[in-house]
Image (cartoon, rainbow, N blue to C red; front, side, top):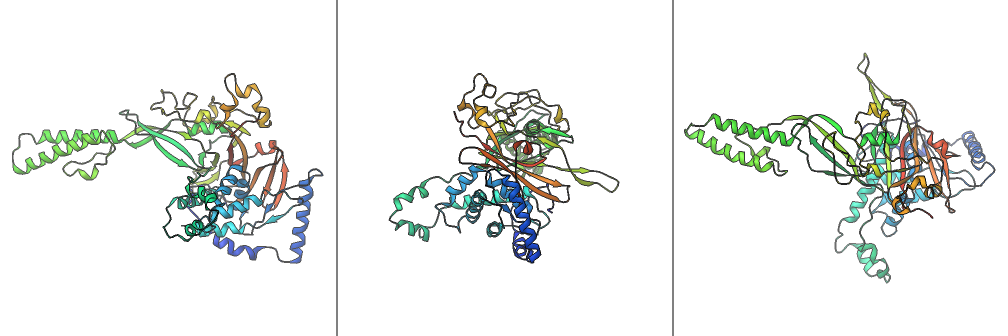
Length: 509
């Protein structure tokens, strides 16, 4: 059993040390327990093979310390071919001590994709120690959540990527070794090529506009490795509706508008100057001089982003609260699009309230198009303006409770069809689209993490896709050591906690 938490993510890792230390002592050691475990594995093997292909994939041992959250994330990442390729290129020319998490994760994901003739499981303890070596802070032992662990792994990979970009000292031992290497000309590109970006990283564009003065702030770009979205208080919704709500205009109360604040500050300075007009004593003349200078500072600040609060002495900066709109869209899509559904809801009661799990069923497709959620460089200011979407679809209501009445967009359902058959079908392309148009906009489902249980406790399982050499794929349900083959229909009916989609880089003829 694993605890379930879906609140804010703890920045980086390391209570895994306690887990790692306890794992070896929690494994079955008695003869009876070993026999029971062996019978279970044999049953799983028969269930997996089903008299057909004699292959399966590794399961992961739950160390007895509620590590299903760790196992579920590793199985999901093992399905991501673009992440595996990125890790391979990242570690092939680096020392283990430079990128310990990348090295360890690469080895684990490759092992989880090895074809097996019978059921096997192993304990992924190496990643625990690698994360501990990389960690800057701890995750509390009570926060055993798949979402938090995923964020932690992605953060660790980004930290190692940043470390690789830092210039090395002239007399670094690894550089000297490579300089005297007779094959230096072959490995030279590894030192001169730019560091490859994490395929999980994308870019959002966001702008806030004041509804009182109409002023719009600059477009802010933020890097993300996944998005976390709330779900409506409804029985069900679609992935399109959730993303539509995420990218629609959001209304903000009690927003401190910089432009309104500057205008109010300027007005107060002018009013103060009027009050002391005609007074010629020494102190008043000094005050008038300061106010005139600070008036000019405020006027200059209205044309740029300069902060002036600390520069005002005679005058007081006025913070003005207004209503505003905010819109977030995707400026650059990642190669791997990870989505977390925040299922925590607060229910008030006579004792103050309680946290519950939102059971809303999200219907998600096997393939979908992200075009209508991409920014074209324009962001809407007011509800009457068109969305910044490349499809110019109208902005939908930001109120999640009403998400069930939304419509529109280009997210199409191709749940039971392989991509080759989709690509050759006219209803997918439309009259003006080509195979080249599909590149970079369509995503294919690779994994889904599901939480079984309530808000306070439960168990994580993963549905993951495994690509075969002939281009076909198999879906597996992995629950620690238990591994079963399932169909895509089963996957699409699950109550997802996290989804992982991979960008389709090309379309086969």
